[in-house]
Image 1 (cartoon, rainbow, N blue to C red):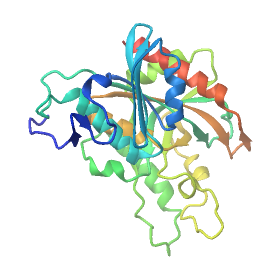
Image 2: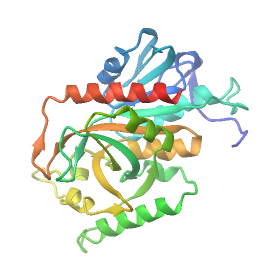
Image 3: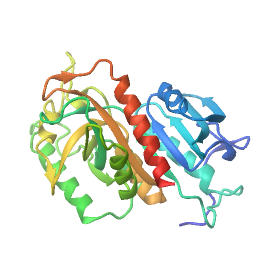
Length: 302
């Protein structure tokens, strides 16, 4: 790792977007897209030490079963997650001179989200624990690093499936970004163990850069480049894994986490499934299951 001084933006001793100082965050972090869900996670804490809301970000740090933990409400999308993870990492890993510490703390991140299913035989109401993630956003492409044969194979399979179904006349044929990343095995396994007794599945997650067109939803007046993207992705399999759900953050979390040495994982209830015509309008019980599972997993990792 470079000993060059970082360009992390600080204002009055706090990172620019999260509005945090180093003592207000811990290495054990839950990431939620919905800022209101941060309060739902923190309601399980036995005590709250810090609560900071700045811009669209909310951070709550407290204690759970004797361990210091932080929940970050980031808002939707990989661009917001990029800011949150890098600023959290900087607070924990850089010294007061903005140089990487000799022995920075081990960070762990568990994302607790919601997602849509794409496999007809995986019911809405299932908790999806992500192994690999496939990102369709472009944010990760600005952070290059070496990868594995498995990652390259997944990228190739996905590119081939999607690109061959984009019409020849489309200006975007051959131009859609695709990259793959992987959860940390210890976090993935801890989540599966903590989900014992619940309806849960492990598989590949697709991270979309938007909610409508990138998920194949039809909006009159707009033309989708890939209107059948979910059914196309449902055909991808690698070894014994299939794509089981779509959401909007995990691929970048894993991509950055691998490079920065952060152990990352994701649990997302599947709250709708167009393939099986299922949806769960009131999915709060599933959110509670995912939160409690993530908390058990984090404790198990410490």
